[in-house]
Image (cartoon, rainbow over all chains, first blue to last red; front, top):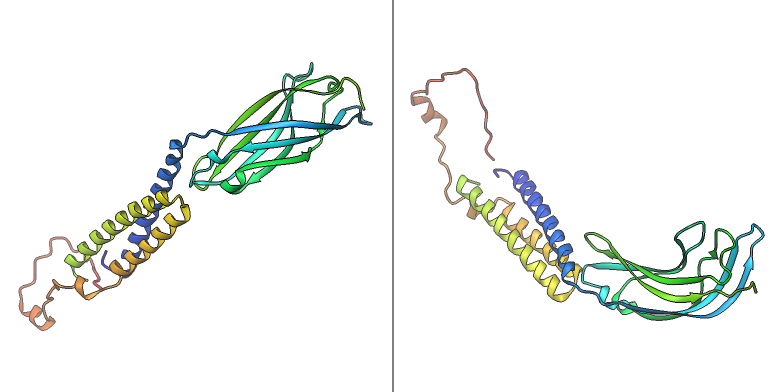
Amino acid sequence: MHSFGYRLNGLLTFALTILALMCVITSLSDNFNTPSPSADIKITNINWFQKQPQGHDEVSLTMNVSADLQSLFTWNTKQVFIFVAAEYETPKNSLNQVSLWDAIIPAKEHAKFWIHTSNKYRFVDQGNNLRGKKFNLTMHWHVMPKTGKMSADKIVLTGYSLPEEYR
Amino acid sequence: MDWQGQKLAEQIMQVLLSVFAVVSFVAGYVLGSFQMMMLVYAVGVTLTALITVPNWPFFNRHPLNWLDPSEAEKQPKPQVAVSSKKKSTKK
């Protein structure tokens, strides 16, 4: 520590190491947070339900999505990415998961919301299995921290079904 | 800086940085603001650098009195066992 450069180097190295430790502790402090999120999705209208020229079923629907995800936010949360997926079973696939809508929630204030929207992404099946199909709508979310590991979870809402015939 | 000063500088640096780390973490956690934690810590690092890195006079309170070269010539030279020279520079 006998020159300006040596002391500066020692100080900066120590400061950076301690900063890394602080980030680890910050990330661990997120485990003290017990989230209690809630969500509800209502399908208000099936806009149309067609068989595409290539032979795949496609449906367009309008839904009300409401959720309260405020408890997911901590001081270490940068943003929460949420998406709504339709999940159902077909003879060919045990699980089909089609993402219908997504959003990025940048702050706690925006985490309690209600939105009336048609599906942002197309609901297309790998085949013709959608007539009369029962499906779940699952709200998935990914909590992205400022420092640390990303975590994900979901709420499954059951009881939705498509019409028996094309319209 | 003298030897005592170097030890003092290193001790002050370690203590100050650790204290600022704790203070900034607590401030950020209590206020719920990651940005606050980073800001307080940055201020702490800068402050510590200003105190410990430059060659302040209070780090030189036990200066080493090197012998004047003309005096040194009159003293007996130490016997060197292995003929290898090491240069150390003092700033």
